[in-house]
Length: 412
View (cartoon, rainbow, N blue to C red):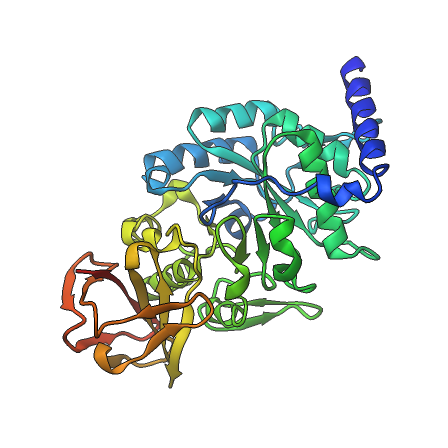
């Protein structure tokens, strides 16, 4: 009880200090710097397990992230989504569900950290989470102190049950609370793109959702009546016009990956992963890591595709051309390299005869030009790691339906 009283007193002190500083408040409470300088990589429980989360699952997932090679490939975060919550105590402090997490979150965080990984948790700006658990509204500073005490490294902050709140202010409040708690945490703004978080998000968090929830489908929309979720291609389309807002430390988030969850074909899995890499999107796996088949594992750990996503320039790709369900995307990379994806959204295979010298490929937003007339580029197939000649020659290839050809061009 003494510890709880001390924490409660600290929380109230932090709140009174924070809201008593007038114009200094916005200047003092900025987001943690130096986090997520490349798009975050990790795993989240929601797409596969929904509310069915517990301590055993999370520990086994951490073990699998290491043993599967995903940690070696760059995946870092083990993120527990909704429904981990128990009740608040008499002083307002949140506790995990004791039946699901009997050892407590601090012990679980210690276990995850011992694997060289990081722990993420989920909360909500409203009175309740989307799953009906206690939200953080009115408890932001207490929750931040609790997460810091537990050793949390990443917070996904949702937007259910937020009647009367303004998104920018609500997310600034939780970031101020995280700052006062003192432990650097990535803030994932899960506001669904309603209030254009790409405009104000870079000063508040490290990533922000640009759309409603992803649906485990390549090209469809699921209508829930009062809201909709979107297939992979619909989410890709919603990224138009947003690339200028992203860069090292602040990312557009087209939602978590559905790779390995059983409804996408192998080609669709490749297209999904390629496009998230091209879009410099967070790579947050959503499958059961404990029971991955070799094909899923190969997609999620593909070194060359991940290198496109994790490139230090942090520039999001742009759509260069589209016709008859076939699209060409370009992404400038560091050291003069470029990534190219030929995306076939159509129901039939498409042949390519791409004459590099006849195309004028200019990124006006970031002032980059693919100048094949002055520089010869070596072409590598990022999925097979095979060399395909140079840009001196016409690229001839065929892309199957609902699949992708992703290349890396490197100056010779």
